[in-house]
Length: 233
Image (cartoon, rainbow, N blue to C red; front, side, top):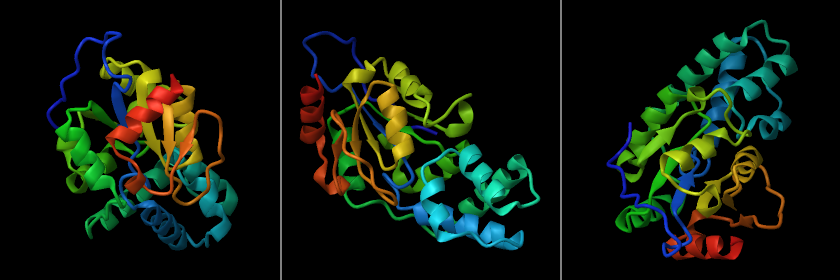
């Protein structure tokens, strides 16, 4: 699912430094990190295992293969990775039916990007079924396209999702601003050569040269993103 593609013109030296905005989904645009943890707790309870609270920071932001794999190993649950992934996705989608709250500032920022025809893509480690269902609440019209975690051979923390998004938008990764909430997503975006604006959700993100950290999307607007790319250059 995707909305109408924003205009992407041939890139020249006269164009603004910011060429595209690439946005993570869970924990960045939508307040769903609790949804994932609750789904994991519920599924493992049905399997006869109790998850420890300290494991939450380990699994946050990771691809399904990593987070589910860790929980299988940590609990010694008698279940395969593929079967567990199906159960977790199904439980998560069930929770989405009750409604999904957007993060503070998310709706305003997306509307501003759309109004100024800034090319934007949603780049998530979640599976396509989850991304498509989530778009109902976020608004598919805000994105030229979306990238889901099960559509690539390698997802976050590898750079592939962000390199794919930049290429499809015909943008230089170094002139793309990425919004992410986890260390895994930040690592993927920085490995792709993008400038990251981190909005930590569950776990803190360490400061680093070239990395911008804010407490909320309410601090982020188009002028702010443009200024970050100028600084990076």
